[in-house]
Length: 101
Image (spheres, helix red, strand yellow):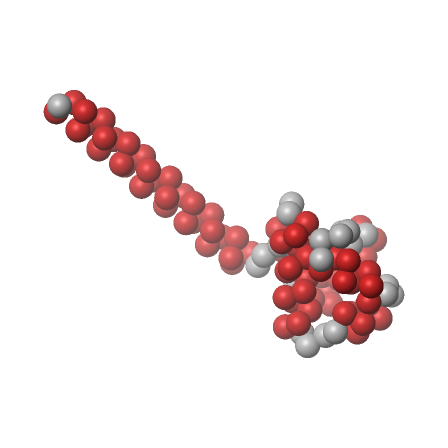
């Protein structure tokens, strides 16, 4: 859980919904300063408000905690697996080359 990524994600989703910090704060019963603190990674949303925040932003709790959309997370994981496979393949080639030398 990366507080900075979560804050940036909240800001991104808020802006995508054309909401100001004040508008989002009013809908959630918090001040715009509180929303600003979330977005600037100075604090995290209180557990009691997380579900309402996710509903307002149209995201899941998992997406909020990861600081990215589920699809983006899936794409990053697939890329990581692909990179690991390529590294293993290169290591095998290196071993074969050392064997020939």
